Amino acid sequence: MEINIKIKKSLRIRAFQLFFIMLGIQTGVGILGAPRYIFEKSHHDAWVSVLIAFVYMLIVLWAMFLILSQYENSDIFGIQVDIFGKWFGKFLGTIYLFCFAAELLSVLLSYIEVIQVFIYPSIPPYVMALLLLILTVSTVSGGIRVVVGVVFIFLLLALSILSLLYDPISRMEITHFLPMFDASFTELLKGAKTTTYTFLGLEILFIIYPFIDNKQNAKLPAYLGVSASAFLVLLATVISIGYYSPYDFDTMKWPVLSIFKSVSYSFMERFDYFVVIEWMMHVIPTMVLLMWAITYGTKRLYAIPQKTTLYVVAICLLLISSFIKQSYKIENITNRISEVGFWIIFVYPIVLLPIVLIKKKRQKPKGSAN
Image (cartoon, rainbow, N blue to C red; front, side, top):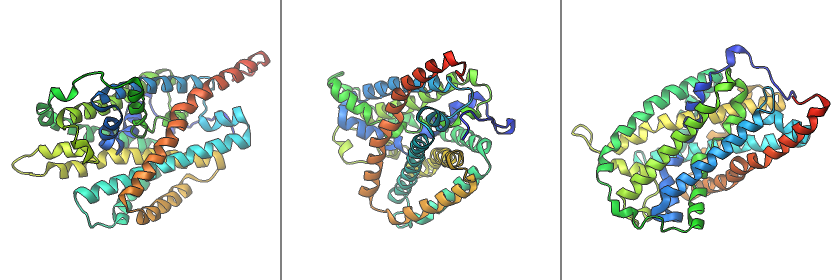
């Protein structure tokens, strides 16, 4: 397995597209329930927890770029093999693949649950799973450039929904934020940690970095993409706190979707139905990026063709989604993924950084820094 890889020019992407990749993979279903879970920990200071999580996310992103810059053109799979050896490095890479697969499963199950609760209670889960997976498989089959193109187009269409937030914003109560800074620092940190599931996907940078053509310009779009996703979570949290009473958070699972119930037009009474359907524009970018990462990572580690992995994973997801129907099971899966993801995505890069720097420093006198 080569540490540094050569990417064909036809497969490379531009640095500015990192903005849409980072934003697209982090604005799936996690943001729908994020305000509730953050509020449970830090109450009306939940918005401060989001800011704390954002700052730490920038630090993790900085560590990722610093790690990647130590190599000519490598990804996390090659880096781990270089640092820890072939077998243990591949083992760690496999953990990343399972992490991506678990995230993909949770996104699929969560969105199916949203569809069932808000629109079609009796629709079989496998029907929605089949429709979503057909779109995902079709997109990923086209390669990385098709995946990025779909993410770009879908996000542009999806972000138009922000214009509908005027009505909920106009009904916010400023008293819901008082007294400010009442939560303890421990509560704020706990609130920040609950954003883990919402901000999962940051690790895609470790996978897609070798495909970026003009790497010297990659940092700004990545930071802006992460900032945009953090802003959306902050906006959803602030509006939810101002719009709902503290007791309302105990009775709703997806406060962001419930906000749109107040939005109505003469031609559409239940606008939240439209929002649920439109949210597919957020879900598909997350799913195609995660699926591509799984197929590429499997090819990189075990030389298995991407299309083989694509079809096998899609079939497995279809079968699993047919059996997991209960809400509490889906929530348990999400919680476990959040707990594991915190250590893999937000702690591991910080631990890996000094190890990489020390190894590269020891290699320099031997004339093999890269």
